[in-house]
Image: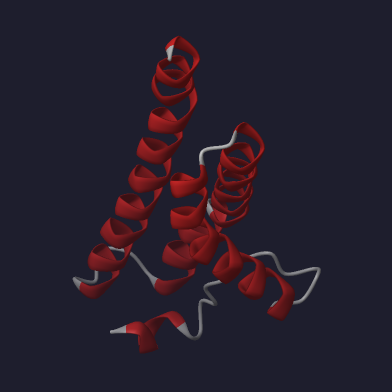
Length: 108
């Protein structure tokens, strides 16, 4: 039982908080874009900076839950990981960002 608590407190909980903070930051950038505080190029570059680390973090958390036998947490993270893999395979190899500075105005 001690290893499960250590796994949750040392790895899963901080990883989930980091992914949630990344998502909150991206929504904050989009609200700044809506209010015309920043231009579309800056918004796209700031959001794209967090895309690859978010994908890697989500995949690592999903794989870690699978290998340690936390099946419920694994089943909760599989859909998001599959969605991230789909986004990664649909974008070009040289372009790792999701948001385009010409297309970002169409989000709202």
